[in-house]
Every structure is written in structure tokens, then in C-alpha cells.
Amino acid sequence: MPFSSLVISLFFNRNKTNYDLYLNLGLGYMFFNELLNLYIGVYTTLPQIPFANVYSFLFPLIIYRLFYNISNSVIFRKRIKLMAIGLIIFFIIDNLIQRDFLTNFQFHTYLVSTLILIYIVTVILLQIMMSDIIHEYLRSKSFWISLGLLLFYVPFLPVIITFEFMVVNFEIKNIITLFLIMVMNFCFIYASLWTKHR
Image: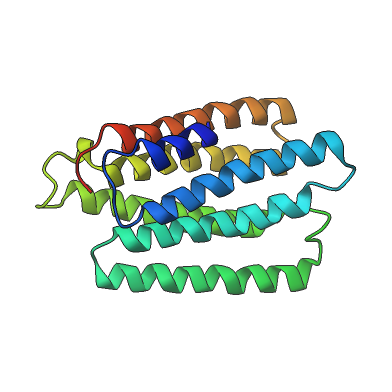
């Protein structure tokens, strides 16, 4: 699904915007991460945890930058920048304390980055829906990108929390994750093919 979203965004995008670079970078990294995890899991004995930790830290930063470009509010853009810096500092401190980057999933960093992302996406969605410029927000590319991320991260957050505390098993987590990835990428594909506003 990330590969389909990336190809459609790169070659069949009907609504080119100034933030497509970051959308494509995020989709490309998402696809590369899935491919890398598959390769490592099947063909090597390397641990997958460090790659998952890098992804759970870098991918939100790419998305923050995407929404930094989407937002028209100077104040909110400054807030996004401060939250991104805050996440970087938190990531460094968390790893200095835990010292388990190579062996354990960085749950605290993931939790903080996801909460920040949900906050940013919610604010952007409200800005889009209350905008005087975009009257048909259902035809807005920003709306569908925001909605896709929100539909993935809001339900996935309790899943990852319960998985961390061994309430949900690996198979159930994977099934839910697959479904949410499909929903999110459908929104991204819709954003590229059928929208007409920024």
C-alpha cells in the first residue's frame, strides 16, 4: 500500500502542492522501512528493533515538516518547530536513561511523537474545516492527508499501548495494523487522485 501511494503521488498526482516533497519523502520512507524489515526478517539474523526505533523517531519528524508547510498560521508553525525540537531532546534523554536502543522498542519516544502528531493533525483539520478559502474541504488534499494520518494513529495508539503491556498478542496487533495502514493509504491515494484544492 505505501508503494502504491508513493507511485500515485509521484506520477498520477492531479493536485501538485508545495508540500508534496515531504509527503513523498514520508511515503518513500514508509515503503523503504517495510521492505527493509521484510528483508532483515527473511534473509538476515540482524535485529529489527533498531530500524523500528529509527523509523518511529524519523517518520513523525517528516510528517511534522509536512504539516509545517501545510499550516498558514505563523504561530502554529513555530509551535510545530518547538514540538519537533522537544521530541529530539526527549529522544536523546530517553536513550541516555534507558540505553536500550538496540534491544527494545522505544515506547516512550513513540508515545510522545504520536501524541504530538495527533495534536498537530487535529489542529490542521480544524483549520481546514474553518477556513474561508477552502469551501469544499472534502476536495482538499490537506484534509485527506490529515484524515488518513488521524485514522491510523488514533486507533493504533491504544493498540501499541496494550501490546507494550502484553494485553494484545502479536497476531492481533498485525491484523489491526494492516487494516489501519490500508485505510491511511486509501486516504493518501484519494488525496493524490481526486482532490482539487491545496
